[in-house]
Image (cartoon, rainbow over all chains, first blue to last red; front, side, top):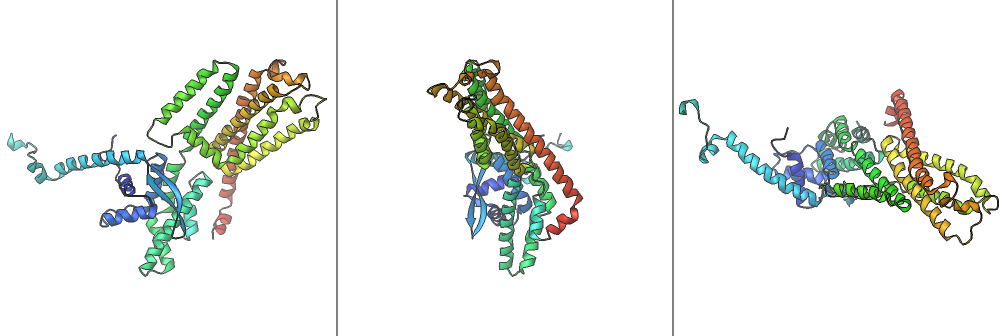
Length: 120
Length: 287
């Protein structure tokens, strides 16, 4: 069954990497910081996710040194940029649609509504 | 739990030792970053490490997540290696019979299909190069042996040859080579498919170099030392060119691949068995 929304963790990782190369810790910190600590990217799921994205060709990684420590720095590939753009648009479209369902005020503002038994 | 025990457990499910090392290094760096930030906020060093491990999560869950991501990768590598092997076989075969060019075209078509997928790493050539770069010793050893065997028209030219010792030493050399490959394959003991794959790739180099060097030497050798040197062109049936293609490029690689695959399975089984019967020792070793 098709997922209702694109994978949020993958989208967040790709969005952070669109701003420039980063290692795992920097990615997790950036998501927490930029979301005002609302979105807590689980560190344990971040690394398997990064390996999945690398395997699928959306990111590439190379070892570098940071503060005298060897870290794997990830960056977006062209395929990753394309996927980010696609998922971002899909995400916005679907969140707006979901919001219309979840929020009656928004639905009424847009002239929509559900015909109820009494209206018929 | 100590940090190294945590890392060991978090990567226990990864079959490839090289991949497990890579993940351990990455997780170690992550834990140190988190720990340092906690310490900067006033947390004692030991507690900060524990906090970093707690935030990273249950190592067994992490291990399963890594295993799910990383252990399924190699079958694709096998497919890519098989494709490359098929291309080499077809290319060599086309020297003898133009119909083999059809195989080469088919291989090129499959390669092109894989190449246009958005996933950049599904590139057979890149994958093959990475594989050979990582295990270049296996490839180099087998290519050298291939050259040795392929130059047989020169050194194996009968009783008048100046190389009788070399001729006699060949079976021993091959045996040593087989053991050498098995020893190098120990690094891959937890991945029988990987061990088989790398040997399949490397022995294709073996077969190609063998045929090419023999063929070139036969053509360019100034004076034939004996009747035996014509076995590449018009010798008795077992030494026809087609027979050599079959023997060197198909049968030897298949044999070597099977030996390494089965050897890795047996070694992996033995190590798994010994670990399950020596839990006390394992725990002690990790402190």
